[in-house]
Length: 297
Image 1 (spheres, rainbow, N blue to C red):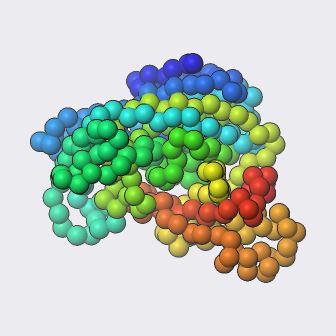
Image 2 (cartoon, rainbow, N blue to C red):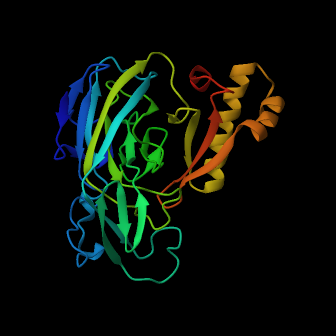
């Protein structure tokens, strides 16, 4: 298995980055990642005021996948997400869903033991997930702290072991990168930080030729989640809904009106996060109603 060390880090998704490693389809790779704060906070006395913000929200990579070309789909099989035994949370003034309130910066170290985090006297079961995961866009550089059709900082709590993520390919080799592991996160990530933790991501890739999704798609055991984003939650919800309705039109040959109607029965809109430059909403469709091919164009 090939390994990419955590010093191979990028802070943008870009077609211009030098490749960290090349892999073939079905070849397993291990990405070692630093926490989203760049490992800069080591005690509760360390404040976000002292952070070097150019070293925040890094992603390990990029990984060049042989055979991936623009117009394809990169299928990312997440085999495992392993975490270290201590994470960190921060509160940053003017940030998060309640950023309009007046409050002070705050830092909290969080111990992780026997599959649980300890937040004071409260124990919460860990579910390690990948906050930032994506490919290079066609031409522009997009900060790893943002999100879009390429993936990025989607902060969707179900991007975890034993799932498969489908990403549209925009450039040769896809130039995949990932990081920002959270030990656990609830939908929304209200304060802009979850339990940020260093760790390892084990995965492998496949390529679906000649088709790609409108938005990144996460496949779980029972459903597909279409991961859209927008400047507002309303805009993100509209994009996610439109992609879902389009899938029903392709699947059943329905006119828009009937597919739109079925959306009220077969699509669940859920919030990924409300705190990043763009807001994330997912349209969840049970596998009873669509196949993967219906979601690709």
